Image (cartoon, rainbow, N blue to C red; front, side, top):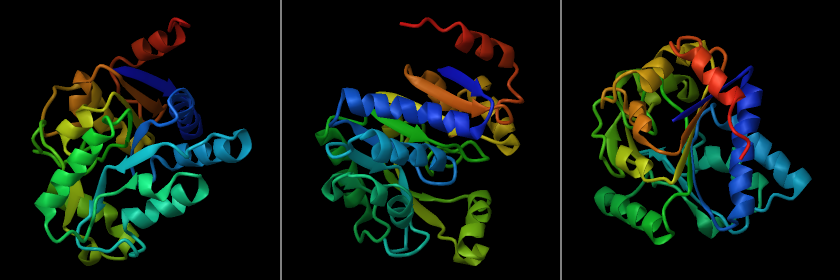
Length: 257
């Protein structure tokens, strides 16, 4: 795991976007794993800018989203389908048939989840997975206690996650209690992983995920076992890392290979 600490959210977003664009240029038919939420918005905005101003071509890529609320249709304004199209897909030249998102209306959930896993494998696996992290350490909707070898499945959301997401729905009562999510094991099979975190409210859980024990109670901690994970943090999110100075030293002295 490489930890990169920069001054601001804007800087980490641009740095992460540069990694994604390098992959797309080197492998035009790459498979991207995408996340929703406020954390990756800066990265998506920078990729959109690269597409419009620098000609970054998304026409051959395939994308798989991490998760979706279960019980709401794609047209629902708070669906992750709507989020991704509004904030990313509608602004680039990705081909609609190459976009994969979990279904919040699948009638046979187990069959759908199996199909989702098979489609990832059919396309050669995820080349680069983008992640955020929840305040309780979850990646995707793999809430505390999720098996570290879990696959795509339906998951009950914790009370904390429901309360955190109530601001998007208007009230706690309106927030779905379930989500379809890639599993921790599915995420770990990505060839490369980028995790982005910003803000002081993420500092404590980032310290646990990066420097604490690997545990199912903080599913983001499993990234310590992944050989090609880069964590991009702004100063606030990095503020509780015990080895802060070391991470800065490593980044400043990274060999230019």
